[in-house]
Image (cartoon, rainbow, N blue to C red):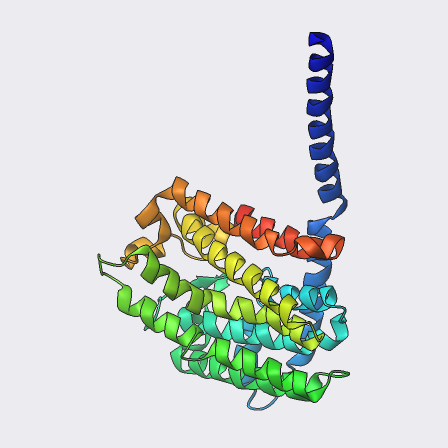
Amino acid sequence: MGNNKLVGLKNQDMVKIEEKQGSYQQEAIFDLKAYLNQRKNLMEEALDHCLPVGKPEKIYEAMRYSLLAGGKRLRPILCLATCELAQGTVEMAMPTACALEMIHTMSLIHDDLPAMDNDDYRRGKLTNHKVYGDDIAILAGDGLLAYAFEYIARETKNVPPERILEVISQVSYASGAAALVGGQVMDLESEGKTDIDAQTLTYIHTHKTGALLEACVLSGAILAGASSEDRIKLSKYAQNIGLAFQIVDDILDITATQEELGKSVGKDLQAQKVTYPSIWGLEESKVQATKLIDEAISQLSHYGEKAEPLRAIAKFILNRKH
């Protein structure tokens, strides 16, 4: 009797181990590094093509300098991946993916200015204003922002017009005073203050960082004609990875080197900014980031293997070193 129980327990343990090994093997089937490299190369080619040098040459050169400066290209890749998940194609999403990277680049150019975060390096290169001056850097950001919407409207093919309009509306909202710009304002106003709590900090970053990232995910879904139910799930996924991205960013500002990040480190401390580690500590910040990624992945459960790129990207955001 006892032996039978023991055998039963061993069998149960073996089943659990085999199930876990099976899940690890299933994860290993998807090669995130190869996927990101392939998609990044695709994006680099598209970005180079989408913004040729015009006149006056200086402004186009400044725009291209920052747009083509490299980076992970996670935002446009998320747009492409979500569109494919919702049965769309890379081709129908590519103009929007390029536009989203233009807007993200605009935000980096402006964020690096002396009047804002005052940074000298971005993506391992001198920031735009250090090369072209503050005046041209501001105008380069303005040019990228305006051109982004022109590019979506002009270049998106084989998508019903109402979906294109909805994408433009979604991206406009995420880029404006109610989201990205408003979050940046709150961030600036919070510098040097000691009474900023986690709730206020989360408000700042869900607007400054999270809103555009959510627009990347939702834009792909909208272009492909995803259902309202799918959009809700994907929106929750995006909100969670967006906040986790910022928490990890705060951690890396303390723990990483300038070579690893491609930008100055310790800037938050110098600017007397409240960060998640300053409120929770490093270990609790890591715990909270992990919870957010787990919640994000849970929103993809009913998609099966089709959602593996989005799952893998979520895990990458949590474990990234730069």
